[in-house]
Amino acid sequence: MAWQLHFFHFLFLILLTFSATPNASQCSIKGLPLVRNISQLPQDNYGIQGLSHITVAGAVLHGMKEVEVWLQTFSPGSRTPIHRHSCEEVFIVLKGSGTLYLASSSDGKYPGNPLEHSIFSNSTFHIAVNDAHQVWNTNEHEDLQVLVIISRPPIKVFIYDDWFMPHIAAKLKFPFLWDEQCLQVQAPPKDEL
Ligand SMILES: *[C@@H]1O[C@H](CO)[C@@H](O)[C@H](O)[C@H]1NC(C)=O
Ligand SMILES: *[C@@H]1O[C@H](CO)[C@@H](O)[C@H](O)[C@H]1NC(C)=O
Ligand SMILES: *[C@@H]1O[C@H](CO)[C@@H](O)[C@H](O)[C@H]1NC(C)=O
Image (cartoon, rainbow, N blue to C red; front, side):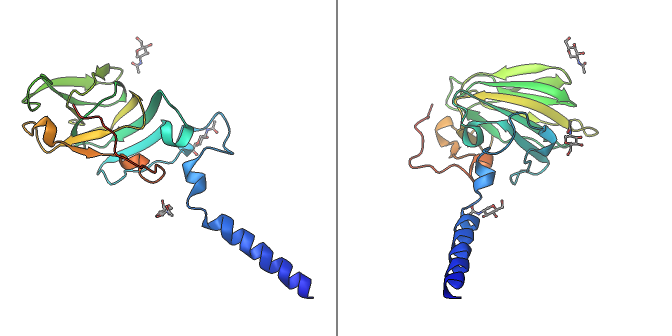
């Protein structure tokens, strides 16, 4: 009888150990098939109103070192913050339309009045390293859906309150919202302008 009790106690401890592993399955693709259904990947707004974000492939979950791919949907009126990052970024607009605001120059002390560019379904654009920008779904009738490719993941984002905030005052957000849960960071990156 005693050995059986010990055995079940042991089994219980094993189960407890495994169940206590913090969100292991959410932080790794181990065990998932190579070809995955995008509709079944985790999606969340990560606290940004009107956003739906899916990391299709990335540094934290998939161990990507050179590129990361996102699928993002912005509901009418929703937008990214004004921000910059020291990586390249390519957008492909899959659905909807909106406006890209892009700082006219990154030479000055602050971004300054942005240039406005209309973006539309089946359009593409890229953002150079460290250019301050904002993507805004300015179409009040339709979602804006974009496929985004960035280099040098995981992304380190500097956020501006407005277009006249000095570059050096922009606030670093790292790990960024969708990397927070699974990325443990020892020291903040040195990616200042
Ligand atoms: C696990 O994930 C849940 C939901 O995403 C979160 O609320 C919780 O804090 C996470 N636990 C740990 C230990 O990270
Ligand atoms: C992908 O997932 C969606 C949502 O769960 C489902 O409707 C669809 O049938 C799936 N596609 C395939 C090919 O399994
Ligand atoms: C997008 O552009 C490509 C290349 O011209 C074309 O083949 C495709 O049909 C277009 N898709 C839509 C939805 O317009």
